[in-house]
Length: 218
Image (cartoon, rainbow, N blue to C red; front, side, top):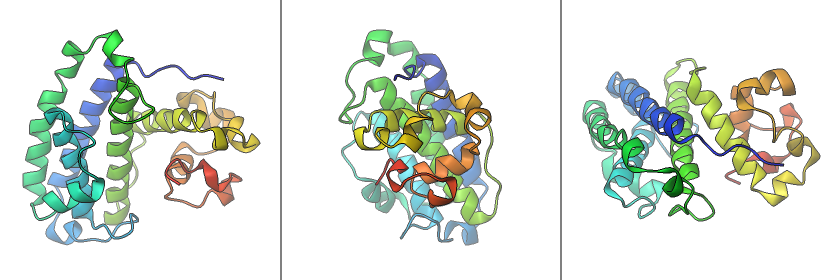
């Protein structure tokens, strides 16, 4: 069983779009929103924003993986929504140049993150930005974004589960791993957003009739 590798141009442009959307989201938040608790235990909205911006900064500086998410959050959580949005805009300008300097060979080469290619690592960043944007939307009472980021994130999660021997051995998980993300709901009967939340540890998978090890972060 296999899944297609993430397309280089589509994934890089998708990451840039996701960061741009995230910057717009946080830049419009109020001080009250900034301090709201989120479903990420121990993190306020400001911490999620700081982590995502810190992740983007580490990516463009070539130091990705040198700081844990908590370290990224702690380093920038005191900044205002406007400042963090501006820092993310600056980072995504550099990220947009990736498509011109990364060829297919580099895209398929090992990534600093163990077990992933560079392409899969960029795909992971796209998923991280979308899901954390969803965490903020949930905290401030906004609806989830049903756009391309949802299906790109779903595609990453399905790939991660396919690389997980324990999850792949579960019949309830195995049956969905080759399903195209764009046709996920039609072919599985599972709402894409609900599945993504369960597969990233944000929702109990039991009502979806899925095992606990569907969570890629377990």
